[in-house]
Length: 388
Image (cartoon, rainbow, N blue to C red; front, top):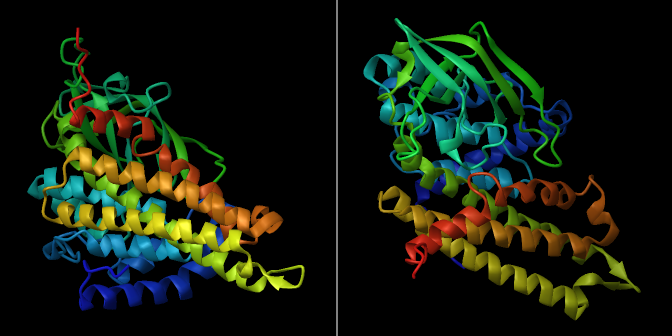
């Protein structure tokens, strides 16, 4: 189906992204997967091309874009090429918006120029061992001591945690209140060279091998009060405000990855002969790919509409949840079917579909599991309260 949300300027940017990915990312991607992270110099190179700070205001050296569509285009193009830069997506699509919206003028002057140029990479640390999606269960504590907070605790599943220069840490700055489980959490911006900050294991995942994911610990880390992001105790409010964009980031990449899977399966089926006949001549192959195409078209329409609403600042949490739930479930089904078309070769890592299959599984987990998305949607339907 024809997409109508992009202008000629957007498509010119897409062509630049596609060229960059083909010439610079794709040839290095296997190396990045083997070493478990993207070289920091690669992000600096992207920064020189204006690809790492698209929504950073121009006064701080960024692209000054108010739209999320340029971020979406870059994410789509990485997926179309069977690659991914999850660390950059966290830095650019999640962290930078927090800094732009909640940092004070002095903090913006310190952090945004380097972030825009890919020379000050960032990550966000929310999840802890045993807490999962339940932010109210966070145990990492920050105790005020004069002009500093003393930070102690641990985080896990932190994308970009190995190479981050700045880390947004969600910590408890006041005691847990059973009557207000969302209160008492704050966001501290931690310099990763701070004494007491430790990067633990780099987690060995089944997919997303080029995306560094780490365990982190904080032992009496001194964080200047001047590095508190926004107001103390407002973290839950801030995090909830940006969840729609985080979930859209996942949904956009999911649909693009599913589209790429159809292309790879179609190309393979054209070339593969069974009993002397191309695989594409078999009805089952044609029907499977037709089903996949219809599902992806539906997911694309949903995501494009949600993207327009995100730009207009009218995208509700429930509609963001619908977009993430549907697109990631479609991604899982479509990639599985496209791998099946490859037969035994679909299980061999030299074929992109194998890597895509492993990469896709986490889409239904991070950014809120499919079950969490269903809970949000059910609440929007008025189904959350028990009736007696």
